[in-house]
Amino acid sequence: MKPATWMLAAAAALLPLSAGAEVGGTKDIPVRVELHAVKSLWLSDQQFLMGDPNGKEVTIGVELRIAQGPGKRPTMILMHGSGGAGGNVAFWARHFNAMGINTVMIDGMTGRGLTGVGSKQAVLGRLNFILDIYRSMEVLARHTRVDSSKVAVMGFSRGGQAALYSSLVRFHREWNKSGVDPVAYIPFYPDCATTYRDDTETTGKPIRIFHGTPDNYNPVATCKAYVTRLRNEKRDVELTEYPNAPHGFDNPLSQSPAPAKADQSVRDCTIQEGPGGQLINAETKAAFGYTDACVRLGPLVGGNRDAAEAVLKDVTAFVSKTFALD
Image 1 (cartoon, helix red, strand yellow):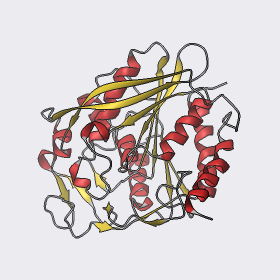
Image 2: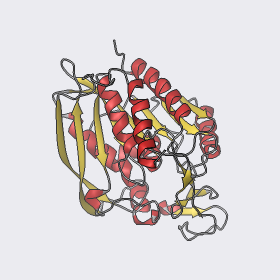
Image 3: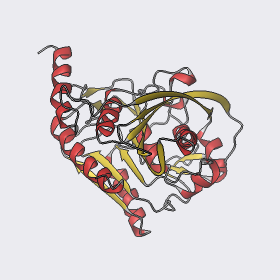
Image 4: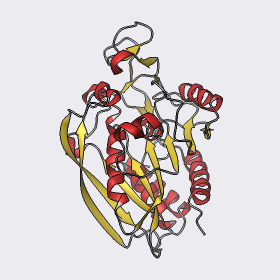
């Protein structure tokens, strides 16, 4: 089967799993689509950690899809990974819309003149996406079709890292001026290699991490260690691990796992926040950089049907309960 045919077949196979998104159905069609220009910043991670707002001003694109249903609706924020908003983001937006949930798809790349940073991770500080999430919440806080008491955050890879650590009280106090307090955080295969100051002090809202056993882009082991630390502090956190699920396993347009040859992975790195917000390589005790020996290239990326079906069911159940959907 040709690659293009395989991808179309995979997409068609997964679409019926989305409630109301069957072929010919209309529940997944939003009643309104709005494109918002949102002011954000281009910051180094050190600037973000120190609360330094003196970064480059940028305008990011935010697509808000208003789901069918009366009155104000619950809303899911979707934050993409290093490659930009791909097929998995669009798939989840369609699925949530079919459930009667608004979606916010953030484009953190185009407004910064980027298409992706997988092969040049240092170009964009990893914590920028947290600020993008918070700034997007300002749109939701004042929108007449959004129930601002029912907003959740979901992210993938680099965006999963942002979704995960956007739960920290420290970051909310410094950067979230929207007044929106998300009811849940749903990171997919995030990078958990970095330990930040006060990173077990979360808002207390549920954190649900979804990851794959063979992921060698962002290994699940580092996230398990972080989850253990969070549980020791009595945080509401769970990690669901899927066998045979590579990085990006939920993307219905992705083929079998293949090396992303130029992509940089910190899978062998241990990084810690040091004094003054500087990120330190725990092995060398020097400032971390993507030229460090621990940085690896060529992680596997690809879809997995079994894991995609399983995570769809798991996320649907959790979100339905969290948003108290009828």
